[in-house]
Image 1: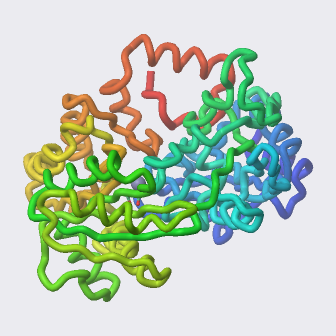
Image 2: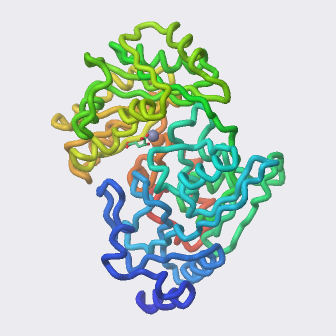
Image 3: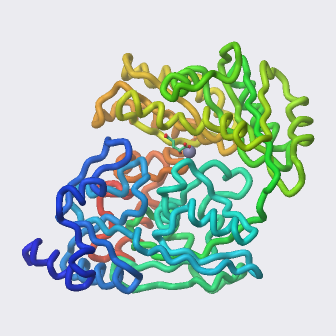
Length: 455
Ligand code: 2HG
Ligand code: ZN
């Protein structure tokens, strides 16, 4: 069928106002936040509910029409933009947010609910949602489930998959699977929620999730610690995890990144002197965690300076030095973002080696490192290279895999890293991935340019 006739047919299902074709309206759906990934599409489809998603996917499967599912479009690996001219399937209108189930400590949220709205609703009912990330006000439940988002509190509450108690999704065939009862113990076969979580829209489209909530941590304390060396900062983060039971975040960054954040955001530096490495730690709980954190810090070696905050504004001020890294780096142009995990014992050595690995293939590039130290997850951002130049990605990801690390800690594989997936996954694993894809998306319409390497 002619493409425009097919798109007109979709308007009969969704209503013409929810099939966007005007280039001005479509523009923000076809580029990622960094501007590195730019796609094109004949239309953005905005279904209202699961039944409309199913109707769209059935028609697309019959027609062999590929779709790119999209939530808040905050992804960083080109997984949610139509790089091969796919139709964009925006889930943002699926905003139903159920009542908090106080007995179970759970809630069912539609794919289009933002993480920020989910957190606020949990808070209002005396609960909290364990996943938090800087893009909370745009990132959606569907997107964070589809990518198994990690973020700032993984050391305390785990990743998105760890919160998932059930899922509703439309498979590539158009069939709806719905398992939202929220039973914690439920050994009735394959864990489809766990499978779809992190599948990056390649098997189907997440339409709702049943999510566990956590006890609110009303009392908080934040400290910024400075160190003269990278190993001292990394081991301090690892040690605090053991010594401070209320630790809820441990974030690492470096002198150059901090100076850039201060320059780009007009902030005063936290200390009179600059130091090589910084650790931002937060402890939280029902009781005041200050004494426990202070005792943990007192037991550390090599702390060159400390700033502690308990007032909300002062805590936000310390968090800003970490949170603003992404935005500050973006002022230098579109970075390559390599989101990797190292075995804990090799993290410090990798952070010291990474700039030389980059310089080995791109002498004029700049390397920026920051990340979630307790998860072994460092974000290697590289500026000063062309958007399509694969040399730095190749060098860094290969080195990470040699060290036993993962080429994707939390952002996913997307379009960016699919040709390197074999660094981490064996031929037998990749064949199992392909078999799952054939079974759940036989027409190959679900995000076809993402995750799986080209055959
Ligand atoms: C973070 O930890 C995000 O702030 C984004 O995962 C990382 O900008 C990045 O590379
Ligand atoms: Zn991160």
